[in-house]
Length: 260
Image (cartoon, rainbow, N blue to C red; front, side, top):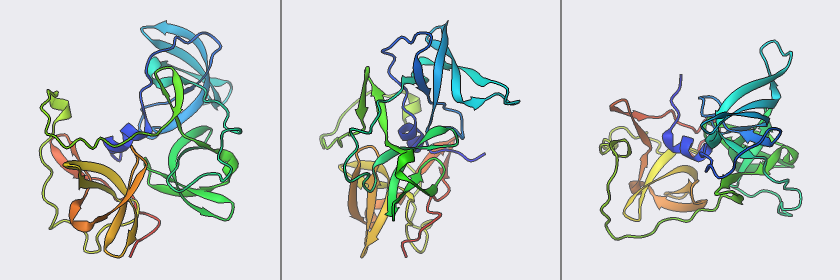
């Protein structure tokens, strides 16, 4: 089974701050951390609390294996949020823009992705958890929102540009060795559209996706800040994950387009 980048996982799935106690009958959305479902939100109804911040829910669109009744499951409160407000009145008159974070209603649930293009009346959505790039009509899209400290808000985080050295305490789980040098492992053709990369900027390495190329510079989209910035190749490296004591170069995401 393919490994999912922890950087992508942290973007696609956010644990919900437990600031609300749900009651029987509440309409909610649940976000599973199960591989293959990360980045998806499914409509459900609260059946009851099972204690210790866990709830039994009944899905609205998923059925049991024999398709005789709605599927039920148990989730922690960190995986449950209220249904986001309807966006008909808050949508931009111009619709979605390039790199907007959206949810797409497909396969009976809402799936997290980025607007990657528009062709005619359809928007292409890039799904970072799968590497797929698929066109959809606008009526199945909504702006992606996060449930944070008891409020729904649009994701709009700013970069941390403090350059002064800091000293802090970290757990061993938050520390990893320095990745191996990549000069000999880089593709002769450089980077492709949607490749996962790290950019050396503001005194550290920042995770992002290749979003374009102009001349000798590559544009990198940073999903945590929504910035899209051009960089020379020498400050980029392929993103790698430290997994089970070794470095893993993840499968390249650029399956549809090539920059060269």
